[in-house]
Amino acid sequence: MSMKEKLAAATHEVGEIVVVIVENAEDSEAEADINKEINPRSKHGKTVEWTSKDLISGLEEFVPIYETRPIKNMYGMGFDHNFGLWFIARWIKPDIMIESGVFKGHSTWVLRQAMPDMPIISLTLRYPEKYLKKGPAYVDENCSYFAGKDFVDFGSVNWEKVLKVRGISDFSRVLVFFDDHQNELKRLKQALKAGFRHLVFEDNYDTGTGDHYSLRQICDQFYIRGGGHSCFRDSDEGRIRLKRKKFWEKAVDINELCGPHEAWWGVRGEMLDNFNYNKTVISYGEHFQNSRFVESILDVYWELPPTAGPSLTHQTRYDPGRAPPPIVEDGRYRLFQQLGLDRLERSVFNGYTQMVYLLISKPES
Ligand SMILES: C[S@@+](CC[C@H](N)C(=O)[O-])C[C@H]1O[C@@H](n2cnc3c(N)ncnc32)[C@H](O)[C@@H]1O
Image (cartoon, rainbow, N blue to C red; front, side, top):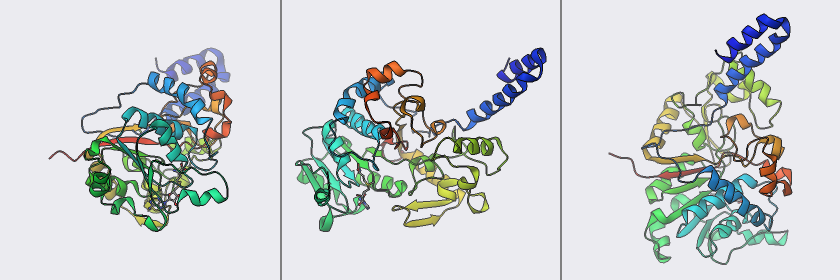
């Protein structure tokens, strides 16, 4: 007997009181439809090696490290993504790490905690040391900065030459971290062309949100579980989104999700780039082709789960229904405490945007 049938039977027994519950059951069935993380098809259906047990022991180790951070990053990466980047870097153990988008150097510090002796190459418009005059910033001794007048965009670097000088010839031993708010399709193609395989994108914005075309947006397709949307306002999705918007600041309702001619893909039918400075209208056909291209080079796609459920973190920004299930589930307060997570200010859990790890390789002919 389905939930709906059980409740219908209950209605018969006790009368009107249950009607309210039946409505809720319909809501939760509909909610289940949009409560799905995006799970794109990889070439051979592979997933990451690490398990939730590994993530939990990682958290235990990382919380005391995080507490020593030099920059209290109010507007940048929150705790979840700090942990994700640290965990992935430590697991992969690259010979060198490259980051694009540095600001005051907080993510450089996170990479350094994961790999104390490995070189880092950081590309960013302004040298992080410039921020030191006004407050905390992190400048790393074993990092080559391509910044200020020496700035070169990731896509224009001669990586073979730059890495050869540093004794690196195996590009599969490099980890590239992007937090530069550029079109992720563009970055993906540049990384593939250079021969990099391990990539992390910090801001993997959900469809309809953010300032650049993200992997999650690209992979949001009707043929993928959890993907595709309807712009019909009175649909289940429309109703549920409206309800969710009341709870989560970053949730978008159907009016925000859909642009002209019912275009929902990307951000209202546009592919955004460079902090929203560049916008290109794309057709659904192009959006679809972008996803097929991504699938042709994808070995692994893994969205970092949020650290803990919202009843524990008190986060108010992202809709947990649009994210993978958290590492520490709601209700597991003892575990939250044991991991030291209760010692952190709750605001550090407000920056989650589905950070994603990708393993890529050239398409198979
Ligand atoms: C969101 S911030 C990075 C935050 C940093 N990862 C942290 O943990 O605090 C984005 C940075 O990207 C830089 N940026 C802008 N365009 C860029 C580009 N084309 N390549 C690399 N960095 C860029 C900006 O100057 C800014 O410092």
